[in-house]
Length: 119
Image (tube, rainbow, N blue to C red; front, top):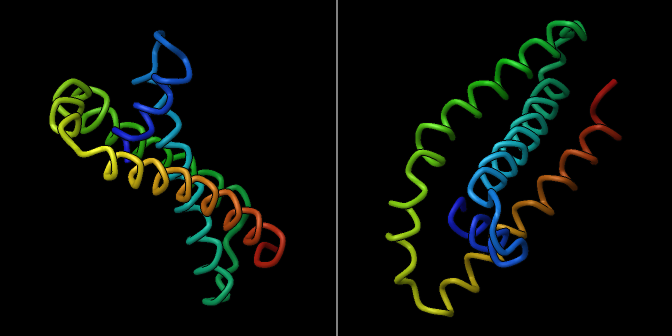
């Protein structure tokens, strides 16, 4: 997912910090996705988690995602790019569709969870 997001941002920006932007973007959307899953789990298990605790846990989870993605994605950008540059045009297009679908689904799922499951 990182490669395809990096490639699409690089095409749109023509230079700059596309690797860093892809790293932050992917981390943020993974965080939204995990937050949505936690919201659904919280709703169905009827856990009454205080707002301050939920905020603390979410900030820690985002920090963990950032650190993990830094060491396994951002620092290895060249290696990842070399590995996936050899994909066929059809696979690259499929990868771009997948990453943008993931982004749209993450946003929609987060919105639905906020509207329906969070009290």
